[in-house]
Amino acid sequence: MKLGVILSEAVRTEETYDRLQAEKLSVVLAGNGIYHAVSKKNGKASEVLSKKADFYVLTEDLESRGFTAGDLVDSKIKPIGFDGLVDLIMDQHDKFIWL
Image (cartoon, rainbow, N blue to C red):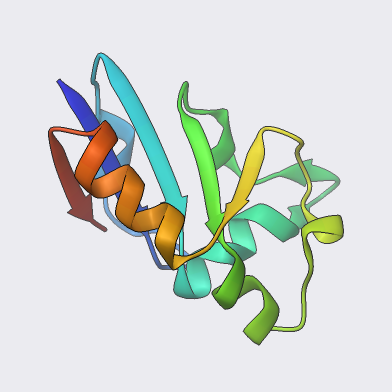
């Protein structure tokens, strides 16, 4: 299965994300979830980014919080706009969930 996940919280309290497995997994960091893409704790990137997945961050949410693509902590995170998100949802995945 090709699964997409929108992660919108800066602090995760559930284990659902850790249990996700799919043939293809994509994680879109949106809302306060963008902080996983721009913040380091004790010099390390967020554990969210350690999952084997394609990572995206919504440019509009990034910029509305005062960040740019230059602030991303890992080159594997790809900035996308809402049009790119629609393409991911409609064309590249069987299911999409929001955490």
